[in-house]
Length: 284
Image 1 (tube, rainbow, N blue to C red):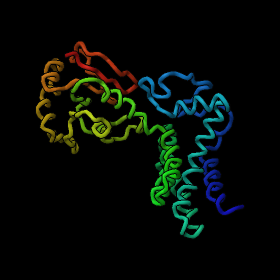
Image 2 (image 1 turned 45 degrees about the vertical axis):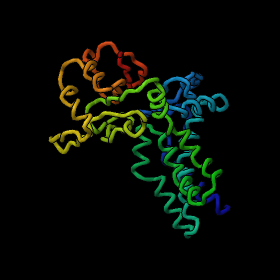
Image 3 (image 1 turned 120 degrees about the vertical axis):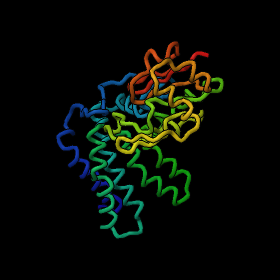
């Protein structure tokens, strides 16, 4: 076997072991991993409408026109192991082969990959598998290999949240975004219920007002952002929000993985309504 093929072959073997009976015909469905026999080509898939997964759903929809959708799914899942193992081995190209194979095996066979695979985050893992290739291309300073290296990450949905962010930022007129629930951490379903900082303050160009106060045990610290401090009592109260928010320069309310404000936010326009993500535009 050629030396270049050893690491991809090892990744393929590890993928076969990891997926096991899931490789037989039919669909492997687990939490966030949902494949269908023939996904329709909708405007949301290429990002022409508010999507949930862009462009991973588009890639799956196009590939399933050529290859049966269940086989497309298995090829994508196996490619995670092949790309990850081969990428880490390629990144360590100056090291002994045994060390490169050990690093490749560890990178694609570990608790993190197992957990993400169980909860169905195949798109995230595809981006994870591309990271060694991206680092190798950056280190070499060659633009074309870098573009090819980030392709799996792009297919894996790095742009999913960015499309919603673009829709908010592209809306005419100024105005900040209030982020709810009023807490720094989130436990979204797509993260397996694990706590994480909300990504929206880093995704949006518009000012984002959020509760950046840390919670330690049962003690919740006050926000640090002066704008959040001014609105803290209003948001945590029970009265209507719209007038106070508009007076503070808030134009959008983004509810990420949390309860909706309901009657506390009368008369807004819903501009994005996706599972676990709702964006309101306040009427001036």
